[in-house]
Image (cartoon, rainbow, N blue to C red; front, side, top):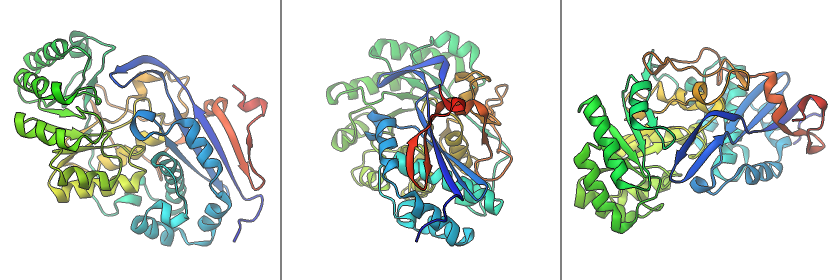
Length: 396
């Protein structure tokens, strides 16, 4: 089965937008975005998806995902999109997931890139939003509060003076526990006891330092700690929870549903961080949230730093239908990128007077690519296969 020639096409963008402000934490320092954006066009309908590979999270990079995409039989993907009624295809996606439905194997970011583009396209075909595609019938909130992240590029006082109002605070740990204790203390003194404060160690603690660090930070006012130890240190995480009483949220350790099941079985966590790219797309992320609820643990709906648009709206589609989330990060494209550089319209907005987000208006992921995206065009696909994008319009 093959798709008729001339009716389908794909374009891959490798996006490295300069960031207006950098972002610094123990695992990485970022001054540009690093995303892949995929546009699939079928009979005049376009779907746009995104992934944000991070080697320290899933082992994938933009280069490895680009190469894996070149091995995907897109003819068969387009043929399935054309020959299966959109509603039937959506039901199968919800039931089986993207890989089995389309016969595609690969890492979480590859699946995320393809799935978000396909769901966006189906959403346009059916007139449904991303949230309706994944969680049909689930009520959507008018507004959801988003957390504020204090990374190592900004001091605590400036953060407290400029980033409020505060609903939930995440502090990126440094290599200096005394500094981190001072930071948490300063936040508690300013904000009081009501606002949760989480310290994200990004796997930088060791089994010998984790217990004393956690005790000091808890005494200073920390509510919970995120990914304190090297990835999947199940026994040491259980020990940390038992000896300190500190609640642990896992991020890099939980990339799959099986990871979450193992973490719960090993008593290694109290919550998980759900990120659409890390967890393999919207459908897998929704399943992880549903599992967390059934297992009696919490969840945060997070983002990769410097997502450029489709991923932000994808995670928000979940967040606006998940009032029980411990926290929602919501994305910071308004802070990270200038309006002139932004590659999508409308740009995902945050009401900074209240630090809240509202539902996007439109079908699918509710955005489209701007002409500014074309400078990042990298590869084009036709029925002859993939080839470099070389037109003057799309050359950097």
